[in-house]
Image 1 (tube, rainbow, N blue to C red):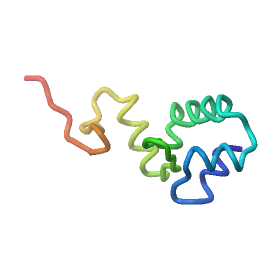
Image 2 (image 1 turned 90 degrees about the horizontal axis):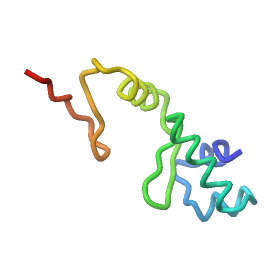
Image 3 (image 1 turned 90 degrees about the vertical axis):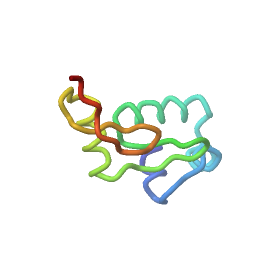
Length: 84
């Protein structure tokens, strides 16, 4: 349910997500944690947004592939430093 509420708008605040969902804050937080773990949403401070398919795909490759040549650092895509 939280994912579908978030997907309706470019960015949703946690306050709005709590209000619209009718769920308690702890339930919303646990749902967001699962969505973030699955690389479906991105949380910045008190707001959250759905990741595009491309963003989700790249983040999944970065997370699970040791030889993928890029990393995400503070929201910036960078080339992975290679060991000599």
